[in-house]
Image 1 (cartoon, rainbow, N blue to C red):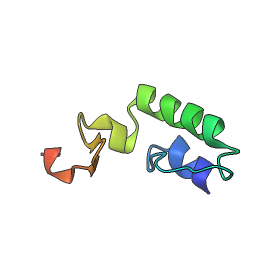
Image 2: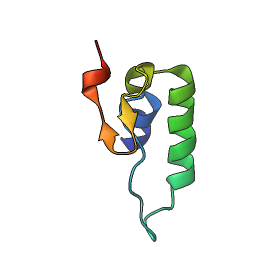
Image 3: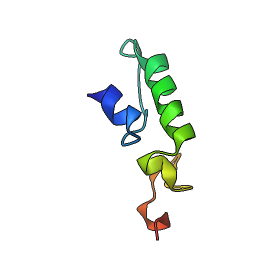
Image 4: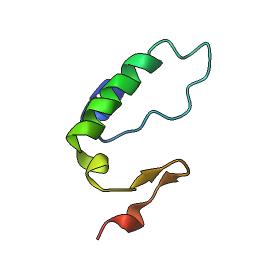
Length: 59
């Protein structure tokens, strides 16, 4: 499920803590591809920032 959401640009890798970080590198790689393709949340500049989502940037 997580992979599908990341792949479609509908989710963001956030807080992953050891020892539950087994798939972190894979998840970040999937997210990077969605970002580069500007899918969904990544199609809006500054929609996601370090302090979370900013839906107000969408016109």
